[in-house]
Length: 243
Image 1 (tube, helix red, strand yellow):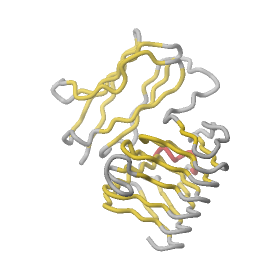
Image 2 (tube, rainbow, N blue to C red; image 1 turned 45 degrees about the vertical axis):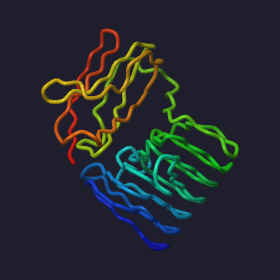
Image 3 (cartoon, rainbow, N blue to C red; image 1 turned 90 degrees about the vertical axis):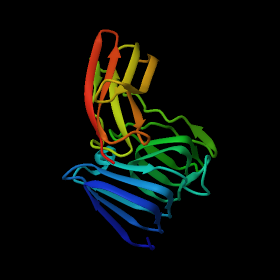
Image 4 (cartoon, helix red, strand yellow; image 1 turned 60 degrees about the vertical axis):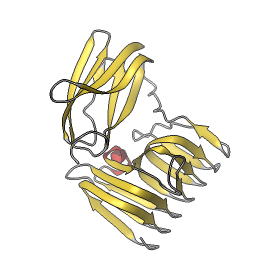
């Protein structure tokens, strides 16, 4: 996409081989009718001074816009790189589990980043959770950040497992859950005939609000069952993989 262009997308799933955004591109997302999922199969490149808007929720709607980087982003193979160039303002989830995501100088990012490695190369980088809770402080050049959600200041009052988003999804989706106290948590996924196909969480988890991403690219389309057990709490959600 050329410099100074506008990319306008509404609710739906978009499969793109290569997405190259020039400088000063404006991203206009309309989630009135539902979430937006962009699947980039080969390469994602972002120019400088990008801007974003989400209708109708504004920055709070960033969790309903997901950019999945499915393969290489630059150079191919393990260790591929997604660079968010300087001066950009991004409202979205970026899910790139095999890539390194680099945020350069003067970046404002509202949403979630899931990556093999996250690097901050500039000093003026602001990472914000969709609820506007700051998830990192000022970071010096070259710092590495763990891909983990910040806990809110107050602990949740009860156990929760939220419906996944996006849903339907392809190939990855996010599940959020809450623990009022530290617990042994097991969250697993089952197919329609009850076979366990994935384990998302299995172990001790601290009290607070957490999220986990399920990458189902190796599974066929269909309805799956996510079951979470934490102490005496059990909850089940139905999720739809639509390829």
